[in-house]
Image: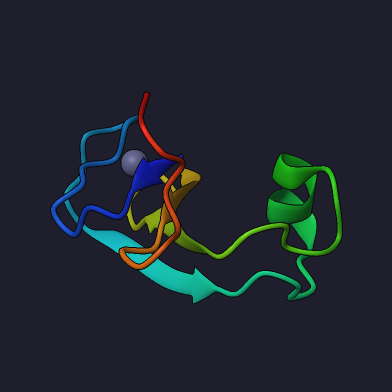
Length: 71
Ligand SMILES: [Zn+2]
């Protein structure tokens, strides 16, 4: 998962207006988000991004997320 980028562009249509919503781990999730993660409970803290033009959704890591150590 990429780090949260407040200046992100939509990877599908290139739009620059991207909705952001923090989803804590353990929260119940539904629909597309549940399909994307293969579970009805959010597995990890994340920020859900959604393009305001084409409605593509993806996830980014919160800025305070614990990072895997880089080798
Ligand atoms: Zn888009």
